[in-house]
Length: 217
Image 1 (tube, rainbow, N blue to C red):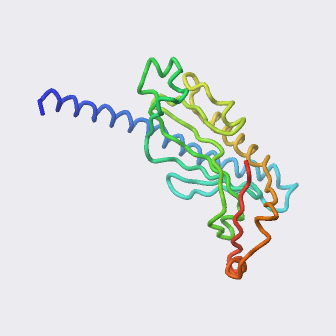
Image 2 (tube, helix red, strand yellow):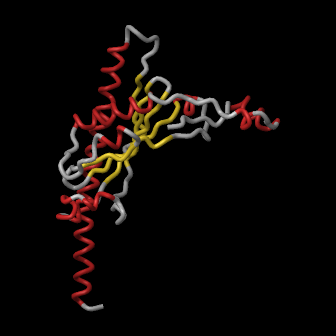
Image 3 (cartoon, rainbow, N blue to C red):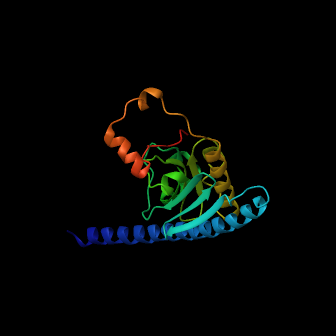
């Protein structure tokens, strides 16, 4: 290998390492802001509802540095930051944005995923219950962001070249995810799917209440 090729390899490694570390640090700091905001929202919303409900419907819990959750009545929103940095595939619409066309490094992004589960799935250890990805937040080296998600989650935050992530934007994203999740209730499973059951299955249900359950978003 020639010295020039070695220098090219080393330079590319250094450039990418610095870039990815900056994106990771930005995403991690925003995720820390998100955790603090969820703790504040728990107190704020419960205070407003204390005269109207028997039990506080909001409960925040930190799971790890990269995961936390907010219980909202019968739902749980799980917020998970991926530890890796991602690049978009060439068919993604983000490549059409002038901001990206002028700076190819702008597409390297950290991801915060938002999942919706039933609270009872965790309470009764129903490990086969289903959760749904409500939305995911992409954050880059410049703190620019956009959201991919269902319905209003994806429509409100798609100006990647101009929007900067901050506490106010995080609050709007969280509130939108809560509202979207609360809009969907459990649907009765089809009768034909439930009409036959084995002894083994009913014994399992007696022990752990294992009935696979999930919303249809």
